[in-house]
Length: 208
Image 1: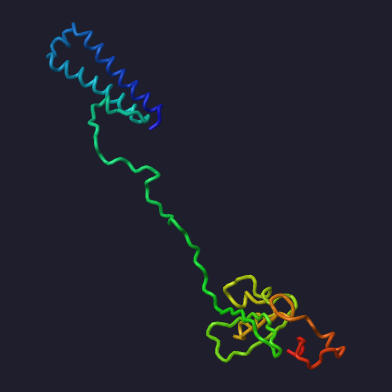
Image 2: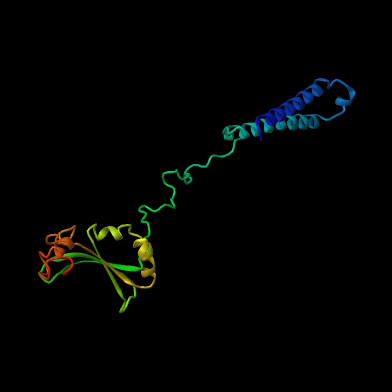
């Protein structure tokens, strides 16, 4: 209830007390004289109680402590209201973001060639694969780059050109050239082979 209504109630109570006081002041008339003193006191008490109750109600509506006015007992030693700092929170002390389960197994191997040089190789195996076909790509641009987005789905992890292979259950392999990124040895590629410098010597990417 707003303060305007409270003020109206208090005004009505005061008018009631004023009216009763005027009645008592005119007690010299025969009508009032005929009333017993106890009835006059009861009317006066009722008017006073009405004014007092309106005042206490207005104070309570405005958020004031009315225990001192109404004489209401104050409970001592009761359980205190929980403060915001002690309230139980629904947020856990340590929140761990659940990780989606991957549908593939990633292996990184250093595979030796015939001359002993090891080449960095990334192998992507679909879960549950058995006797699955393999597609191998050798690259001078880092084998890890092709599987670097950490997507839990293999068809979204691999390059777009490999989506159909991933969905068909192929094992996908990426391997660094000799002397590039994670692979050992020196880079001796197709141009050297064409020149006849190292054909069939087992030290070129074509020979591997």
